[in-house]
Amino acid sequence: MRIDGRENNQLREIKFTHNFTKHALGSVLTEFGDTKVIVTASAELKKPKWMDENDNRGWVTAEYSLLPASTNTRCKRERDKISGRTQEIQRLIGRSLRACVDLEKMSGVTITIDADVIQADGGTRTASICGGFLALRDAVDKLLESGDLKENPIIEPIGAISIGIVDGEIKLDLNYAEDSHARVDSNVVLTQSGKIVDFQTTSEGAPYEFERMVELFNIAKSGIDTIIKMY
Image 1 (spheres, one colour):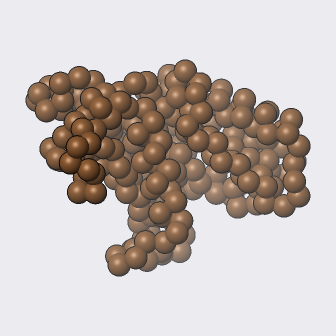
Image 2: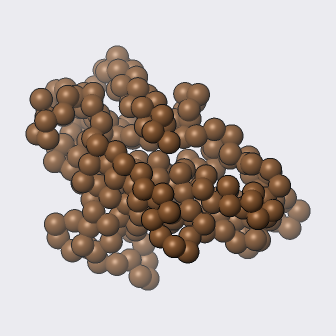
C-alpha cells in the first residue's frame, strides 16, 4: 500500500472538466490527484511563419508553464528565457499531439495547446498530454462546425502516464513524493491502438533489467487504456 492508500498499479483519481474557460476553443481542467493543469486550445487560420509556402500541412504546437504558486516554494515566471526542462516538456506535448492528427487535413490552420500547471504533485507532463488531447478534440469539433476545417484530422486518441520503480516496486502514476526518490522514472505516451508515441525511461541509480522495463511498459499501457476510456 502506498502513502496515499493506492495499490501499486492503481491510478490516482482522474477528472476532466471541459469548457473550463470561456474564450478558448477548447479548455479542460485536468486533475490527476493533486496535480491540476488548465489546458486550452487556440487556433489561428494560417500556417506557422517557419513553414515553407509550398507546405500544405497545418500544425499543432504546445506551450507549458509551471505557475508560481503551483509548488510549495514559489517558482519564478519564465518571462524572457524558458528553462531546458520547460522546453523539453512542451516539445514532448507538441510532438505527442501531432502524432494523433493528420496534418494534411489541417491545411492553413495552426492549433496551439497551452498547459498551465496551477498545482503540481507529479505527472504534470503526462496530465498535460491527456488534457491537451481533449482540448484539441474540442477545438477541432468547433472548427469543423464553423467550416474552418473540412475534415476531422484526428486519427485516434492518445494518453500518457508516469510510472517508476520506487523502493524496489513498480508503481503507476507517481505523485511527487514517489517521483522524487524513484530508482527508475518513466513517462509513456501511447495511442488508443497501443502504438508508441514516446517511451522515456531513466535509471536514477543502478541499472535495471530488461524484463522490468517490459513490465513497466505493460502496466503503463493498462493505465493509459483506462484513461482513454474516460475520454
